[in-house]
Image (cartoon, rainbow, N blue to C red; front, top):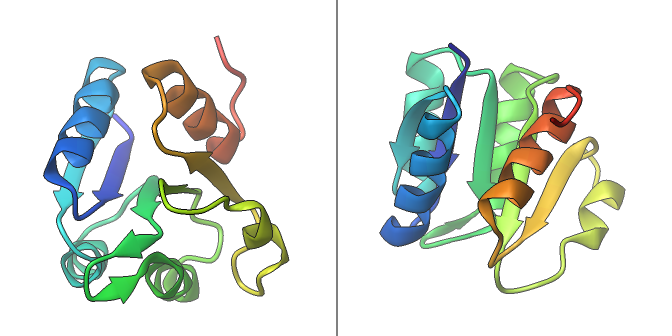
Length: 122
């Protein structure tokens, strides 16, 4: 079962994402902060990460960059409700990050994950 790390400081968003992923047969590890997410990332292997760009006390760009230093090919879905994420593709070290604007529907989340993983959508 693929394992996904979900890093978001909003507990309701984390819960919704995790519920959708579990229904779709993913193992989920939740982290309420960038620091907790990086700690979980260091302690276990993940097949994909969903990272909020605006995290309390840090930003998702730094979290993503740290993960990519350790595992450059890690599929990542960046999420944000505060700003458009179009510029991520032009940011060094953040190429191949799939962006998803909040609020999103479960189907949009699953499509973003399929794109990040390079798998066809159903």
